[in-house]
Image 1 (tube, one colour):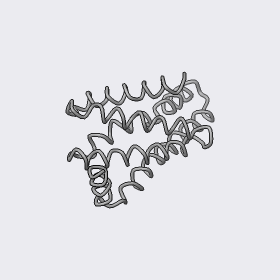
Image 2 (cartoon, one colour):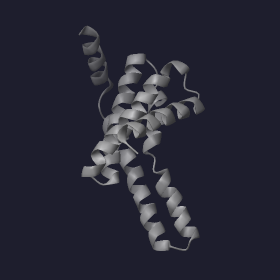
Image 3 (cartoon, rainbow, N blue to C red):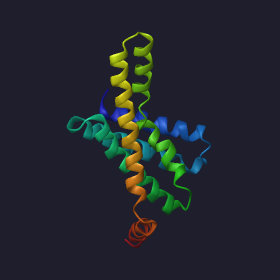
Image 4 (cartoon, one colour):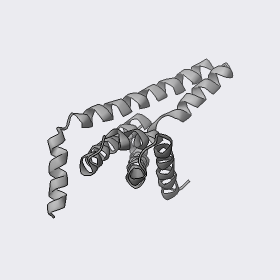
Length: 148
């Protein structure tokens, strides 16, 4: 599947989860942008890094944009963060781990499970890294954009 189609799928999936999580309708476009931008970075970094590294880069962008939009729109960061991170969640690896367990291919299942754990840790690290940036920094960025 080409990059544009993947990004579009991430945007639509993010908006779908926004609906499911009862995000107010006015935030759907920004939520979709956050999820699509995260998936785009994941796809662009993946040829040069393993999946956990690409996920870390994407998670950093998702959290950064989520915090930026939360300051801009004066709403909780979770409105953008939770749906926006969904495309990065290693659901496929978890599925394949369960499949290989059922098929009694324990070694392959362990590999898939460990890959899922590494990706999950990359998501957590991305969240932790960006949440170390003071809130004032995001306010300054928004103020600078408003002045220009």
